[in-house]
Length: 252
Ligand code: PGA
Image (cartoon, rainbow, N blue to C red; front, side, top):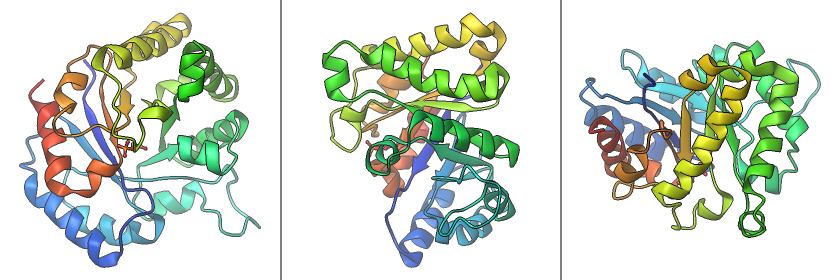
């Protein structure tokens, strides 16, 4: 049985004061008996402060990006060991915003994935197609290639130690959510790809949905057999909204 994981991706939002308020409200709103695992991914500068707030709670901490290099002269980059050092257990790799705006290729993402695991972090590998690719009926091909790059460098065992997030690019920050059936179709495809390599990995790997998930649409998505949680952007910046998604997960 796979546990549900509800992950907040705060992106480049907030301030020290906002972050403090948000994490305080999230922690206060959780009973500690949630059926879902809860994870937050704040911007880099606020990781230590959030880590301090999370100590003694079950809420997990992750970062939004990691360097593919372990150490050295890479100005402005952050290594996996450093993230581990400040209390991170997870890191998002290959988010579509970074793929599209910062030129992260499948190979770079695969490098980051491997570096994260080497540093003891659990990668959350984001995959997803653009609207253009979906309309050209290329969804499975694109996602297949995104997964293949990681499979080639880290193998199926590597993917087995990770979380996958299916995030259709056309649904991110647009208010246009994939329907539960649309999302489930791709989640099932991803699970079948994994199962072709290793059935046990396929049955254990958490596959999250991301893209305009909110309190009022979460239950329908989380109810699908191959959707094991959510990667939440906009709605993770409002404690009440985020907590209602966590609660929706718990009711499944
Ligand atoms: P959204 O973002 O929930 O604001 O659509 C999701 C994500 O980019 O991870």
